[in-house]
Every structure is written in structure tokens, then in C-alpha cells.
Image (cartoon, rainbow, N blue to C red; front, side):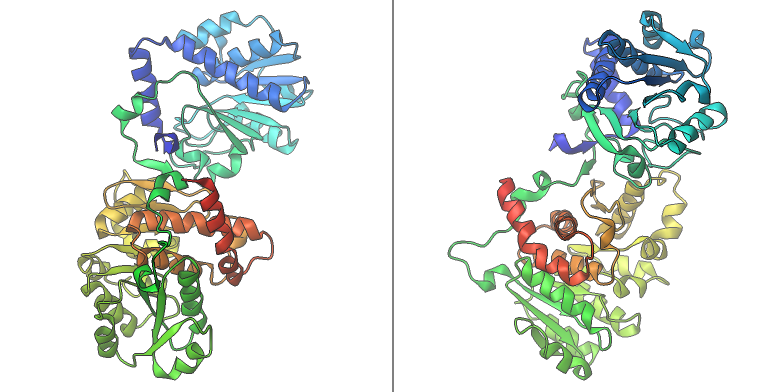
Length: 495
């Protein structure tokens, strides 16, 4: 599991310090970093005119090492130092003195004859926007579309938030060390990183025990052992029975969710809906069960049946008092519940009513607007919640629910502070109904007994893989058709 840890800036500094304290010199770590950068460059390209841009800190020191090793390998290397080279300190100064190659003044002219750039200007801990000549050079890299290898993160990207601080180069490859940082996964930082290569520079694995990281890259290694495959002697009843609340008008949402829940393995799925929409639900997929619940009391009585072990409400139910009443009835029954879409918006004026009703495994699936409606005031007043994973984690603790903060960089957070950043998926997921499919997939996994946090992680990962398998032209129905392929990939991964 530690392989998938994501380290914040502060945690990475801690890992460095612990490794140095254990007896590995910092100069040795810098040499290994530069060697790794040079190796990535030589693996990707044949020798060509190359400019290494070095900054005023340890990132610049890594650049000096890479420049020296590439020059020794026969590459035509030019180096440009931002600021006074004499101001470099410690290991960076040592490697400045080891560099015997050609230097250029730091300006846009320093890259004009280059066919490749190494960006070793600023690391993940940059605290203010890039301005002046550094911004001009980065702008020139982007304007000329020069291939660029960034060190740690593309200069100008904040390592924790992924925020662009003024400007940043669009890297072809980003080399980082030991573990990824949040910026490699969070938008917009991820969009600047290109291909991310994690380099082993000798930082001790044992440092993770002291750091105890709480953020991970979503991967089957984190939840695959909990995935609930059918038993050889099993039957539909021990694969669970889910209830999905259906709306009277937007009937497609619940139908998509129901089919996704069944396709991912739920034994039975019942759509509980008003009588005026019953003909629509009954005429759809024959494997979906339907039940007429014309009022909130009827729904509550129906859902108390002990055979139902998970429920979904929100897709297509409408922002109305009935949706709120049914959601509270579900939560009162203390069964596994997923609240999505309208079932979140309906509590926007009084989120504490929702939070106070949560006493069992519950999953909330807001996109950014819904998140702001439910959690915005409380979370935005906390200065420690600048990052997406921090906001999601605080919301999970506040609501005592698993929170899936959806987007191109979906974050899944548990009430205990653990968070996962998802990296699967494509822009083609921005289509009507894809969220309903995700909600159904989560419900289907909950129905089979998968724990709420792991079910959330698994469904989000599989949802993204399904989109990748289909590609351009994706609509929500296509995701459901691709679920078997995603499950096959999971089987083949042998997690």
C-alpha cells in the first residue's frame, strides 16, 4: 500500500530529513536525483541542443548535476542560472562548482537554439507567483512548444494544491522523487505535468512509517482484496438487494443507476417510484424490479424490509420535500446509503439536518457546486482546507460520511482522514447520466457487502477505466456496457 502513497510538500521534506538523519548524505541524494533526471532524458531523446534552467534552491542543484552528467555523455548542454550563482548554498553550491560547461545569461535568448529544456527552476514549495524574467522564459518555452523535462513539478505549480502560481511550463515529462505529490494528480497541476516519472534516489522506505501518509493514488491494490466476487455456491440473494428511489419525471437517471448496480454485481435491484411513472420503469429492462410507492410513508414502510441492504436516492428524484423525506427515511433505517444529485441539493439550506441523520455507512457524491452548497461555509473558513483532498477530508469528518468530491481529479475521503485521488477517466465523462452510472456502481458494490470507502474507491476507478475503454463518443449507457471489461481487467490484475 505504501507504493501508492502521495506525499505533501511537508511530508516529503520530513522524508528527506529522516533519510539524512539515518546517515545518507544530502549531497548523495542530490547526485542521485540529477542522475535520474539525466537517465530519463537519455532514454527519451537522442543527443540534441539542450538548455538546463537552474533556480536558486535545491531544484537548481539537481539541474547542475543533470547538466554535468549529460555533458559527460556527449550532449551539447548549455546552463542558465536564474539569479546570482554565487548565492547558491550547501549542496547546490557544491554542484555549481562541479559544473565546467557553458553558461548563458538567464533570458529568453538562453533557449532560442535549444531543442529540449530541463526546467529545474522552482520545486513544489514555491510560495509566490512567478514573475519577471523567469515568467518570460517559461512563456517562451510554451510559445515555442519546446519539449520540457521538469524537476519535481513544473515550475510555478504548487506541490500541494496543483495551483498555477502565475505561469508554468507544459512539461513533456515531470521527474519527481520517492513518491508523487498531490500536484501530479490534482487539476490544474496534472495538466502541466505530462508523463510523471517517479525516481528512486535512496530515500528510505522506512520513513513512511514515521510520516504515516493519509493520501493515496487510487489503485486496485488499495481495495482489490475487499472486492466481492460471486461465490461458487452463491446465489442472487447473497449478492444483496438494492433499492433505488425513482423520480416521476426524470426516469432515465434511476434506470441508468439500476442497470449499473446490477451489471457490477448486485443480486437484485428494485426501483421504488410513484405510480404515475410506474409504466415507464416496468417497460424498461426486465431484470429491474419495480415497486409503487406513491407517498413518503409508503416508501418508508417498503424500505424497512430487512432483505434490502443498500439504497440510492437522488438521481432524477427532484429537489423537493419528498426527496428529503425519503432520504431521511433511508438514513433512519441505518442501512448502507448513497446520496447523490438531488438528494444533496435538497439539504443545501440546512446541511446539518443531513449530517445529524447519518449513523450508518453513507456515501455522499457531490460535484463542486453541490459540495459548496453543503460544505462551503464551514470548509472555506478553515485555512487548512486549501487543497481539494483537505476540503474533502474535512467534509467527510464533518458529515461522518464518505465524501466523493467529483471532477477530473475526483477525491474520495473517509471520516478518519484517509483520502484517495483518482487518476482514471477521460474528458468524455462530461456527459449527461455518467454520474448516475457511478452512483449505481457504488450502490451495487455496497449491496454486495464491500465497505463504504473501498466501494467508493473501486467504483470511481472502474468508472474511469470504463470511459477509457470506450473513448470518444461516450454516452452514459456506454459506461454500463463497458463494466464487464473493467471487471475483466480487475480479474487479470490478480490483486
